[in-house]
Amino acid sequence: MSADFSERRLKMVDGQVRTTDVTSAPLIDAMLTVPREIFVDAAQRDLAYIDEDIRISDGANGGAARYLMEPSPFAKLLQLAEIDASDSVLDVGCGTGYSAAILSQLARSVVALESDSTLAEAAKSTLSGLGCQNVTVVTGPLPQGQAAKGPYNVIFIGGSVQEVPTALLDQLAEEGRLVAVEGQGNAGVARLFFKAGGVVTGRRAFNAAIKPLPGFERIHAFEF
Image (spheres, rainbow, N blue to C red):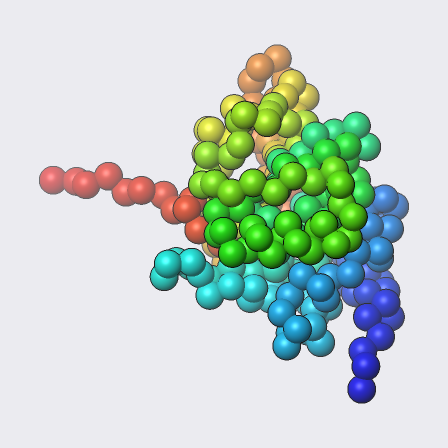
């Protein structure tokens, strides 16, 4: 039986996205347009629109597994960033490229950063096939960002972190926004960081339980 993914896409938006106070028309249009099923393995395509995180990698070199973020928190984070068509965006932890594909429809340009070279190659191939010409996929450590291509109007972190590194906040342009979930599991809190007058401040937005991104673990100092 062949799946009607366009129908599933509509049900995802109507049942998971609109019902969680996501009202941004450009964002909803993007999520109705981008075929989420092509960003997961063929064996998982029937699961592409469920309201759960979907594993896309068991982790490079014994590292942590990677996931495609659940649609609702993903959409709420992007709406929080208030992305404009003139914005330059840094997508931290792009995975197989779904977030970058959505962002490509909302922003002027997207730098999609990925630390796992296998995921990065998959993202490049899939995004190219979709014709996302305003996306550049780069490989490198996620916590360091991609300063060479900054500063950015928006930085999106595609997984939970213990805390947002200063290196990423430093890559915000004036009036730039960074959205991230700090804390893991039920302790996760979505935060919006905003740069004004050269100073970055942050505020709590909503609770969110999403899978962590590797490399952002807090390093505990040794105590005697």
